[in-house]
Image (cartoon, rainbow, N blue to C red; front, side, top):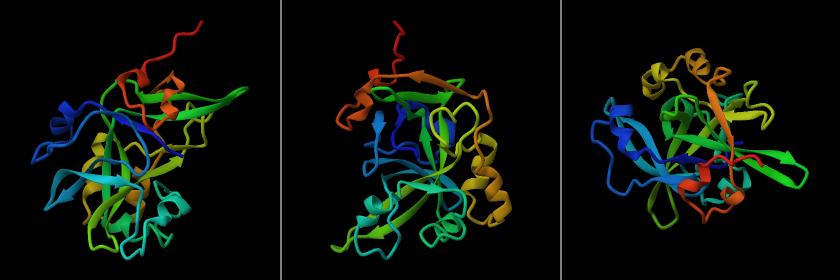
Length: 226
């Protein structure tokens, strides 16, 4: 399960994802994005990738309240069965998105609890998680964009930490992922694959990541072994 991630190369978003309207005001660097917080989401608008802020935690259109985010932990959507599950089956066909990121966090069980790690591409560049989004109207009539990160089975280097990992959409697949006219389920499934082995860099990091109140560059600083 992907519970936290980081996005801090805001200045590179426009060129990396070919954003026609650039990066809107209000998008800031974050080293500790957690469920229910707002984060940048890339969607297709009139055939062009655009960046918008949405809340992490998918709420289906027509839901009476936001309780499903916590009851069913809809901040992640499993790629297996996504075309059949009632919560996801419409969004995976009509509301796919990309979640720009510098990396994500995972924990490994240790004797005294859980040790966090920061995981990023080997080359240190921005990547994009596969996502789905919705437009939900709350009981007061206000519309909210909400999203979920799609996860898949872990590759070999991730497996010591978790049996799941976010789908990292390769650059060559990102246009197809956002192209909502593409409804070939087999082609979409092929994009939702684990990252290749030996493509990720993994660092042990501070326990400070466990607090959603802490959001600073030191969170991704590797811990030096004694």
